[in-house]
Amino acid sequence: MSLATDPLRLPLAPADRADLAAHARDTIAKGSKSFAAAARLFDRDVRQSAMMLYAWCRHCDDAIDGQVLGFSRRSAVEDATPAEQLAALEAQTLAALEGDLTLGPAFRSVADVAARHGIDRQLFIEHLEGYRMDVEGRRYATIGDTLDYCYRVAGVVGVMMALVMEARGEDALDRACDLGIAFQLTNIARDIVDDARVGRIYVPRDWLQEAGLSDADLLDPRHRGAVAGLAARLADLAEPYYASALQGLPALSWRSGWAVATAHGVYREIGTDIRRYGAAAFDGRVSTGRLAKLRHVGLGFAKVAVSRMRPREPRPQELWTRPRPLHAA
Image (tube, rainbow, N blue to C red; front, side):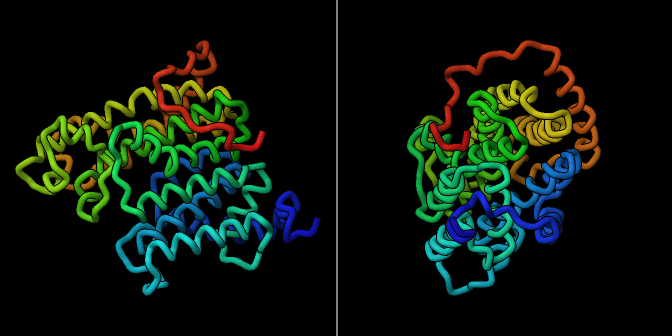
């Protein structure tokens, strides 16, 4: 087959890949300091692929939200609706995966990563479906519906990252998905009020009803205590997913496991702070400080060591489980 139709012949020349990796590194440095810090712990090849995958995810997120590197500025195509942006993202991503190297750096990057690490295109389609949920203003009736969203926007990225780190086997990919879901539940808990301001509500309707709240109440300062209760409940729900994710560390190399364990600690601390601050958590954006991140670098190394000494615990059956099959063997 020709290069245009055979993704297995797609990996780029080292010089071209180095240019794309440099672009991705700049994107990460500006768009996600937490990811940039954890990525330094990967070995060179994994770090390069992880950054290139992130560059595509960041580009998609910015295109849908009309932002640049996560900040509130209009995208370059100001007259395009979110639905039109999504259609363009889908078309360009699939074209890149099929070998079109004339597209922008984010798309060339993701095509190269997919080809080098055997990542099935269905995973990219699943991730784009998460953006469709946002574009359509989807509302979620139950926590199962919310978890389905969490899978598409974050759990599937965890699976792709695991494949980049050469983890294989259903259990290892399940654990990686669990970490992505835990991260997204933490995001939702932290951003309940900010998301509601732009019309995005991920807290399921049945939880709102149990708390005696309407959608509009999420923005009412008089209900901050009840909203904080919802945020704490989401942070609590993330805990078994964080715990499950740690059981996947032995499937990774030391360097990759160290990076993942560090990110695990940094993000989990956000959930801990959300519970601790209560209603005050919405006075600003909860984040993990620089010194705390450094502490988690050391703790992450220890977590990897411990994971190799203890027997692996089975994954709890009650956890939400990703669809199958959606990855290359």
